[in-house]
Length: 308
Ligand SMILES: NC(=O)C1=CN([C@@H]2O[C@H](COP(=O)(O)OP(=O)(O)OC[C@H]3O[C@@H](n4cnc5c(N)ncnc54)[C@H](OP(=O)(O)O)[C@@H]3O)[C@@H](O)[C@H]2O)C=CC1
Ligand SMILES: CC(=O)N[C@@H](CCC(=O)OP(=O)(O)O)C(=O)O
Image (cartoon, rainbow, N blue to C red):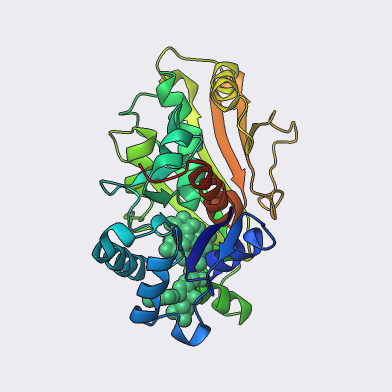
């Protein structure tokens, strides 16, 4: 049996990558919209009524428009997997991060509407939630999250500006400290105090590092770095796409090392005599940070049968 799927926004960066990952799958029939009609509301409505799952790879406003079309379809509406930021903390949506906690894969499998996790949020929540759950970080701990992304994270417009040679080699951005990923990071890492988030973008197409410096003596119980790594090992045991990797002794990490994969690596770098540690997540922003995660969620949704 095949599942009929529509990728709304299949010409964009995330949509194209999802299409490539699904090409050749016998269990999936992609129902495509003609290129000249991809923003035509009537054409979209007809396809939405004819498919079982729609994957939204659109800017936030366009994603909200497609959701409104689905709301109007009532019982004929497809299940939704939204890659945009629009619904990540919205009521009625399940957060599409299977490794979040026990029971999350089952919740995704049964959900009518799944909000695919954001790229920076993937690394940030992967580093923080297991430690909050283990009592090693307090929800009200003041934290700083530093991150670097490849320029594909900015979608078509940023890709074009890098390809034209108009963009800097490296820049910090989001320095108004109102970044769109913070609400989901706070909600799903269970933080009550807003972290400082300092994203940056480099002149490479894809690849991401998210890092969180920690003074171990400021944590409850003053743990050793080995306790932190052990908490990750417990949390990610058996997770097919997340690995806890011993920190390289050289103390360096290449942001591009997981490009082309749908995996994420978690590291704990530490200097015990100084009681300092740096938590790092490495991923491909287009893989585990976007399209790879979407396919992981889609597979759970297909396996999960009809909507809950
Ligand atoms: N790139 C990344 O690393 C990640 C992106 N995301 C999210 O995924 C979503 C898509 O991002 P991304 O793929 O990077 O962006 P892109 O700009 O590369 O792609 C968006 C696509 O949507 C199309 N589009 C815009 N409006 C409509 C509409 N009304 N109907 C149909 N198509 C439309 C655009 O066409 P046109 O250009 O002609 O307007 C474009 O092809 C965003 O919400 C983003 O936050 C999530 C995780 C990571
Ligand atoms: C480099 C860059 O501009 N990155 C984007 C994040 C990518 C994105 O929009 O995706 P998600 O929010 O869905 O992960 C940004 O900071 O807004």
